[in-house]
Length: 345
Image: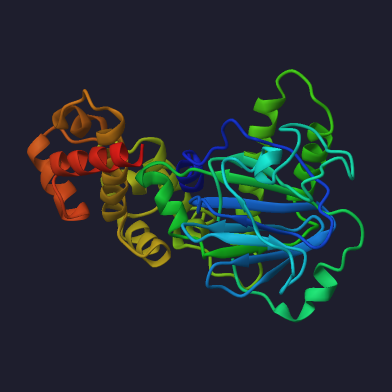
């Protein structure tokens, strides 16, 4: 297990309302739910993503933008469009709400008499670096049909929030990368209605998100999070994989050094230089992140049970470490998180 795989494992599309509509200018789709993470990609045509309190971003054919919530955003044919915004959320897949006529498969051009819609996945949406709004006419000039696919991801738990913390409000990835192959699969899958399609679409969205984030982290001149760059180091990368594969193991700097084939001093310095903190400090924070999610997910488990799961034989030592890292003791954290979850539901 590597750091990225651990962080993204809780970010999954599930039960996608997936379709596609012909968007004829003018259009304005306002995605109002403010999902933690929303992926937007155009199979054909072009438009503009207008995030809340952010400059507009052109979105051309086979390009992808990821929006990080809770801010909302709008997809328009051009900046300053005369179209009245259609509010899109969990009901955007129904015609009476301005969404797609079919939950799966293509709409025939002109068949959808509500004037527009969007493919929509997950619970709802919102993501990257600001672009120049000066090309509005080039990006959304009405040259043919525009087909938008939107995958909105609920992000549950503390683990996945560490991934969100590494992302800007909006990030964009141009066409021509590894995600292009996924787009071809998406286009083929939504063009037919076959058994098992829902599962395939969900997994294709997940694949698309992984490819998009990989390319953004690896972009020339980019500033990826320290843990991403450190994974490429032959020594620190191995140490990170060990910590994520067996977080409850009784790791010491000496044991990590032995497994990675370097001296303790070499490992300690290299890890701190690349990750920004010593290896055991990183391990403690990761254990507390795992514990925070387990406290919420396993309501029947005691604090001592959770402590043992993340590598602490002494529940008092675990509680002290949890409060030091999280600023609250485990029992209080569980009560607060459970109350917030019940209010959201």
